[in-house]
Length: 259
Length: 265
Image (cartoon, rainbow over all chains, first blue to last red; front, side, top):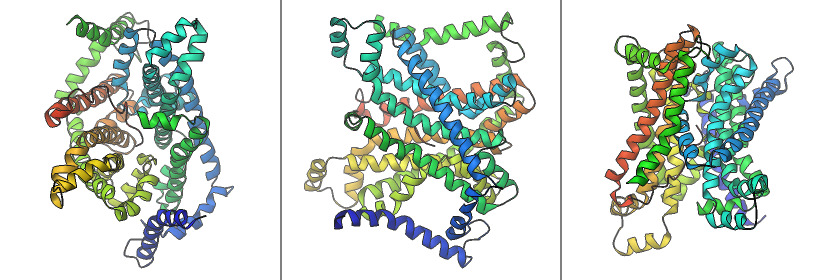
């Protein structure tokens, strides 16, 4: 570890540490009301409830993660297939994009009432609600990915006899992969937002539910712990995902820069 | 001309087909009429509710909150974004916070805001503000960092120093990316605001849909959904219309939609 990297790390840490220290101080001296802003050390100490058998925050975390994973898997599988399928013709491609541009700005959670009408207050309704926005994003990014392939490659592939499934699996899919991966990263974020929001209003378990029920009984410290967990999940879904994606697709960084 | 006509057809053929299909399937009651309502009826309900019902005031409430939240997010985000792109010290202080909180679903902070400032307008404005703010500060900082060092040097040599450096040099240089960041910021602001209203408020478009859901008022629920979709569309069209007016030199450059959709929130 050279002096330079050490200095880089210490600088990166000094900001948050400074803020946490100030928060601690202001909260302890009651300049900030400790009811609303409990000292960070209290929050960290309280984090032990994650492993508490009774409060079972760990179970809630597990359920939230599971929901996010199921939605993202479904969104990727469906979105990539639909996205590639509609690029067959300009008509389907442009038309689908128009429809999705209308659906996209609607927050996914708004579809919850409609889906609970049809499916009842079931897990299926929650998962399908969470699926809406990630699916839209996946389709849009897959279309963009297919469009980003240099037409020359497509022509060469055609000339060398790539047809049917082989054409899609060997040419279209790898070519659009960088854009698809970016889409997955964004979908993960939306999926987490939707799952938390759905848990707040609908589900009986999960981090969102935990947050909401502790809000109703004003257990602020527990809310901060839940927020901390959600923040970690958010970081994992963005920074963690980037780290894995860059390792699996080393050429991604270059295409990111180029676009 | 036939080219643009063709594009127009390609853009709208499937949406129109879907609308017609929906209309036919609902009128003939192939789809369960309890859940699927003809678009004509939805339109009538929307207009009726807008004029006589609560929908009009809900729409205004949402727009007012959006206005406040976005204005605050734009000012704070652009200001801090430029400052942290320009001065290392400010970047060191803000970056760890913005990078940590950016991927946090802001809807999760809503309950906390409600506890701290009460269940009033401020809690919802703050939640929407947080979403837009992080989006805008990060893209603004990126745009300042993206200005090439040669350009900066040339600018300095031609006397762009002091406040003139910001107003005459830096601002025009980052304007296109800044504009794009603001567009995405507004979009995420709107999405989070409506989700927050859905979860916790008793006024605004989001809460209207929640209410309709609880009362099994399917037509009102559709009216709300259509209105939210239209609002999103209007917001993005507004920015598309403003771009050639505000950034005339960008005409034709940014046509191929940079940044497909917003992320985070």
